[in-house]
Image 1 (tube, each protein chain N blue to C red):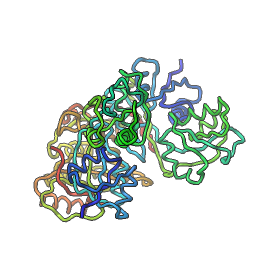
Image 2 (image 1 turned 45 degrees about the vertical axis):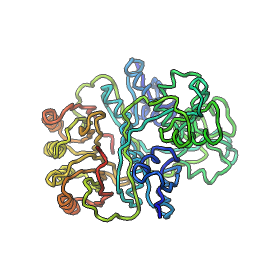
Image 3 (image 1 turned 135 degrees about the vertical axis):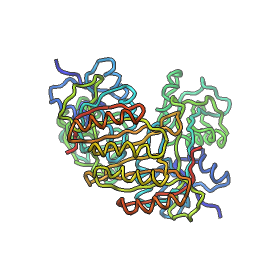
Length: 274
Length: 274
């Protein structure tokens, strides 16, 4: 039986693209209109796997998603870095001069604001999703309306791409992770781990942990501190490391377990960075 | 002559509250509808000081604001931690039963979503700002409309508070910083510094820096890595430290200057955490 994959947003979205890259085109998709809904569908078993954006080069970490993974004890089993491209699309035969309104998610509109300065006749209208608008244009045959969405949406909904690469900042790499509620089998081909721990505000406590990681040949690819709510001077740290030898990772893990409080492994998986 | 203080948002906002806490009620305010506009007004000298939110306990760091401070070479001269409270306010004499619509910033509406489930007759309408709606209700005598804004807005615009503490998560502490374009005089009463540096992806390089900070008796209160865009495997680190002795801070600074690339001090100021 095919696994049901929960994605944030609609068919044709970047989350859908990641789902296809991992599991092919014949997948069972569950569209969720928020990350909360996505996680809820994993917890009530209406979906088997979830795909969540976790950070991007423009805005940094999506902290609420880290909190969801941490609080709901989800396991990260894989990751992918995707370059985000915004394309303008409409019904076939339409030209940019024919477009009166563009409907899209506020974040996509914001990222493409500069582009639309050249087209003052086009009204920008906030909508709930990017790809879902593409679907609506196609289904309801909406003339004069365009969507901002990834290429995959034009393909699925048979729309015409009027313009490529609308976004002002061209280099927007987003990191997506695949999560599930159960702990996966140990697979020794993994070479990356996401760790979380707490430290008291004692001078040198973080340096001590990082020394252990370094001694065990772990390469740090991300670190982020967050104050623990309602506990002054206590901090949570989210740390990603890559490694070559699984045995070294196990050694580091065993030592940090003793040194840090609330030590938790959010996932051990294959590094998605090329 | 009074200094002109640029704030994000309108009179009556949390940014305004911070301005008052530092500089009193007889200040010259410049309302900016975005952080970009705020920084632009510092650069073209139409304002002397700017007040910017930098991080909060719900969403973490506001990375674009770190980037603005870094890229435009602003100096952080002070900071304040403020607990954010959302209050429902309307024209005097109005009761919650009389309210048909609440207009506010999407983020405020989102944070108070749970509260409004008790009042299904109230329509939530997205608007550009929180406090600016309070002003409009007052100026245009808008019956049946309420704003979600801080208490200071009710006071300034003579509105009545219908309900306190609307937000679902009660503990939302936001860190605001005061920035300017010129480097301030060295003031030895300072006890906190915001540092930024780059490191190559060499194992142990961050641990080495943190060891220096620890040896010089610096206490780490925040750390965050960001990949340097278009330079694979190079990372920027934003680090905040507190200290007791200014001389120890100077020592740490001198060593890190030698060890790290692109070392930069974003500001040295008095710790605002009580």
